[in-house]
Amino acid sequence: MNGEAFMNAQTLIEALVSLLLLAGSLFALLGAIGLYRFPDFYTRLHAPTKASTLGVGGVILASMLYFSTRGDGVSLHELLITVFLFITAPISAHLLAKAAMQQRTPVERVTKGKPWE
Amino acid sequence: MLGYVIPLCLAILGLALLLTVARLIRGPGSVDRILALDTLSVEAIALIVLFGIWTGSGLYFEAALLIAVMGFVSTVALCKFLLRGDIIE
Image 1: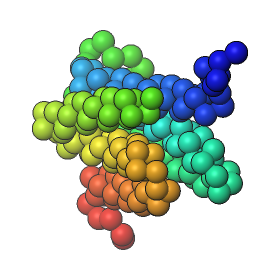
Image 2: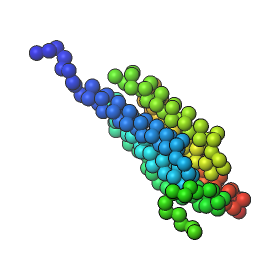
Image 3: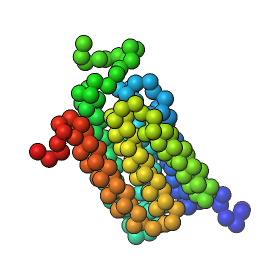
Image 4: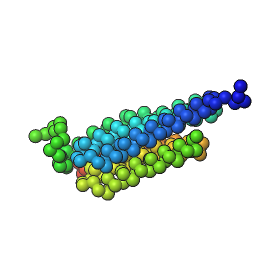
């Protein structure tokens, strides 16, 4: 038998943390790409509010996992940031849409779901 | 393994920040810029938490929490100013 196993618990935790970190950063990058490329403000509102919140949630989940396995007990207080972001991201998106409708931000012809006519 | 993944994630998040700053400069109108600033604060939270994992210190999450609260409050204040012209009536 080998002297040391190929995959022990430490490597498994590191692999899981790396996977979560990569997934979270890729989601944040997708949100920023959508913010850069969508043609209309009302379409641009969707990308960062959903994708970036998910991306930051993934990074914080990785951080919780990493600090829980380093001793000093389970660290659940980092979940607070995710809960706060999940609660406040819809509120800021709603207020931004309201302000844009009042400023009469121009809307493209192909954007669906116009609430005013 | 984390010694390779964390700089890669920092580079990916840096690219996302650059794209958001491009929208901040380009956005025709003020609502686009307010949205870009809000997105910048959310991505800054991810950067700070990632840096906390890298240095192994658990103190950086408090700075991330502060930036989350301040980013949300500033977005609400800017939108209220655009809507009403006055923040606290």
